[in-house]
Amino acid sequence: MVEPAAADDATLVAQAASGSEHAFRTLYRAYVRPVYWLAHGLVGNASDAEDVTQETFLVAWRRLPGLELAGDSLLPWLVTVCRFQAANRIRALRRDRDHTADAADDSIPSTVNVEQQVIDAEFAGRILREVEGLSPLDRDIFRLCATEGYAYLAAAEELGVEHGVIRNRLSRIRTRMRTVAEEST
Image 1 (cartoon, helix red, strand yellow):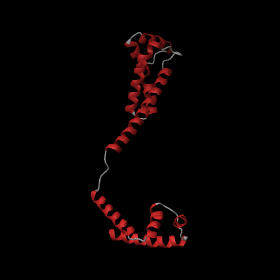
Image 2 (cartoon, helix red, strand yellow):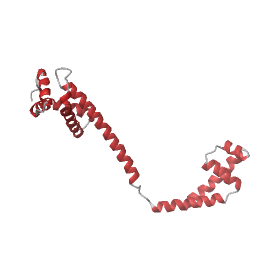
Image 3 (cartoon, one colour):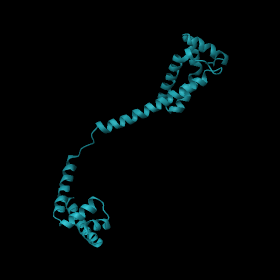
Image 4 (spheres, helix red, strand yellow):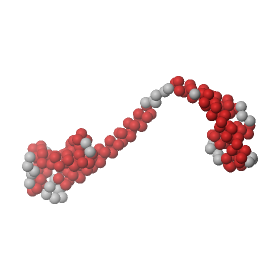
């Protein structure tokens, strides 16, 4: 299709604004390819580029009655509309992707391995029984260092004992827990 002469765009826009489908079709044929390729460059795939192109010309059809061309060609205005439509499409795709990912995370339960849960519960029970069998000081050391993440010096200050006491007792406690863990496997 031959692109309409620049002087003809204003006439075709005026005719299309008055409801002339022929005038609009002429503008469409003249500019659909450049608009499509711009859309494709912006959204990155043919399907979305086709949708953006359609949306661009739909907006054009609706806005032609109030449109005053800034120059002799309709193309710069179509390019602006296309850019906005592409940006809207990209935002919608991101929103849909994020919403779908959130919905999938919320609605699809993860695979439940009942056997592993039973094994984990039994293992945790053995560890708890072993901790209950510790002296009160060792239980406090285990609680502070192993579960609450205290450093040796901080645990020693908290419990009012020497740093070496914490280090030595925690080493024995860990060995004891390792033995329980190895017996579980």
